[in-house]
Image 1 (cartoon, rainbow, N blue to C red):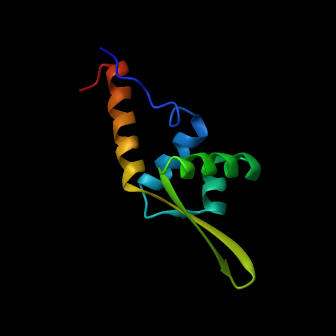
Image 2 (image 1 turned 90 degrees about the vertical axis):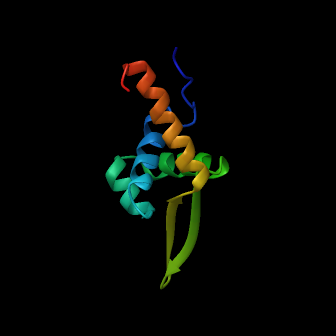
Length: 95
């Protein structure tokens, strides 16, 4: 039987962001933008959705006078990501 896929993580860009963050201690906005190839506007919207769900924590600071947005996965986000991967495996018949 197939497990349901989390619709929040089933979006290609949100899944890419979570994959980057799960495999690191976090990343800043320009790095995530570069790695995903997303536009700044679209990435900003998707980061807001992940943050609102509690999947990531967004820290806004400044480096000198330049704004810096840093994202890291939360324990809730890590659990959701792991459950998503497990659910995906049921579709692929992978143990």
